[in-house]
Length: 211
Image (cartoon, rainbow, N blue to C red; front, side, top):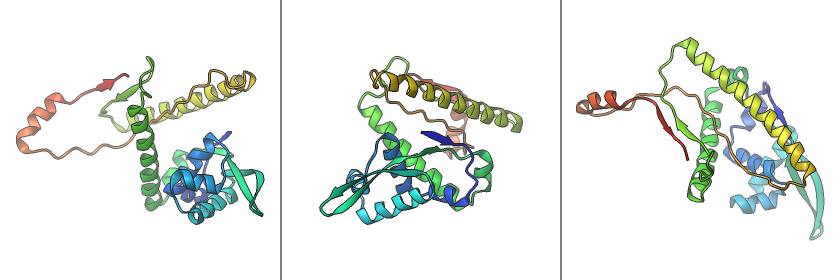
C-alpha cells in the first residue's frame, strides 16, 4: 500500500473528515472486505456504508479487487489503495469545519484502538511505549518538533515497507500488528480553583510512562 503524501484536493480532505469513512478505511487497510461485511462489523446501515465506499472508490482511496456472485447479484470487495497523509500545507488550507470533523473522527478511532489494546494486553510487550510530555516552546521550537515528527513518520513508513517485503517472502510468519500514534497540539491551561493553582505549578513537568 502506498502513502499519499500530499493531499491538496479539497474533496480528499473532506472525504477524510467523515467518521464513517475513516472507520471504513481502517478496515480496508487491514483486509479486503465488501460493503455488507463492513456494515456488519461496524453495525452501520448497509446503504450508508455502500454510499461512502463508492465515494472513497471514486476518490481513489480504495479499489475494487474482486466481485463475488451472491444470490443473483455481485458483491464487490475492496481494499485500501493508499494510506492518506495530510500534509501541513493541505491542513493549513482546510476549512475549520473540516479540521474539526477530521480531528474528532481520528481521535475516536485512536481512542477505540488504544482502549481495546489496554484492556487486552496490547501494552504488555517490553518495548511498548506510552509517553505524555507537556511542552513550553517558542515558535522556533514548535517548528523544530513538528519537523522531527514528520521526519520520524517518513522513517516509520520506510521501515514498514521493508517489513512488508520480508513478511511477503516468509508468508507472513512472525507478523506483529501495532499502531503508532503521534500528536502535537496546542494545549489549553486547565481551569482549577484559585487555591489549587500554586500546587499545580509545583507539579507541572515531564510525564512519561512505559508499558
